[in-house]
Length: 237
Image (cartoon, rainbow, N blue to C red; front, side, top):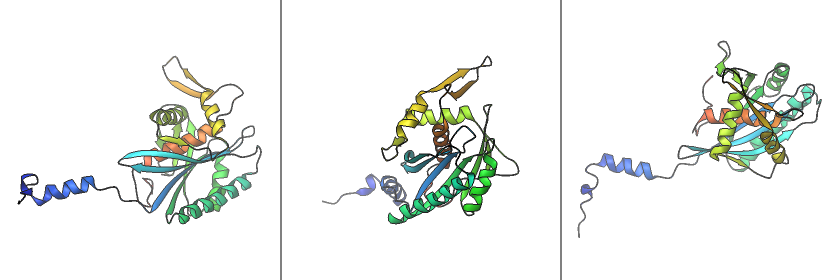
């Protein structure tokens, strides 16, 4: 019996398109990590959240691989050294999987965060570092004179994190001792609506929100990165 395949595929073009659409996605040789860091003030400790961004068929999964709250009043130089050590550990972990780590650091530069950012940049001169000033309002802005500087409303950061949890794209593991703490922080967030109809997100009185902010920073930039499989990070040079 002779089959006439052209009755399904009238030309070679549609056949190639069909095969391409049904091929399994090629595994990337890169692993993308996004490290959000809420740099502590006088009464708040510094925290860091590391997520591994995984994309399949255009859909993301953000695996929270590391959460850490540093001790209160830790010296800025020590924080920068901790991030330098963590950078090496992440790259070694990726290398064991025969992958190359692509790491983006998102640093909260609000208040006294600016000097710490400079220390981190000195420790990691080749790193992709984004500085975020957390603001009010509703619009996210990138500085005209520095594509690595962002002004990001807090309500946008937190609502984006909550949306990621609601959609189920964030995966928490018990590898981190701070999982319960970040869940507690989220449950204690208060949403207030102003007379103008604007919403704001803040921790309840006497509660911390540093872990939530660090995680929100990481998720925000992972979401913007999109389904990329190469070493380049989106936008801003």
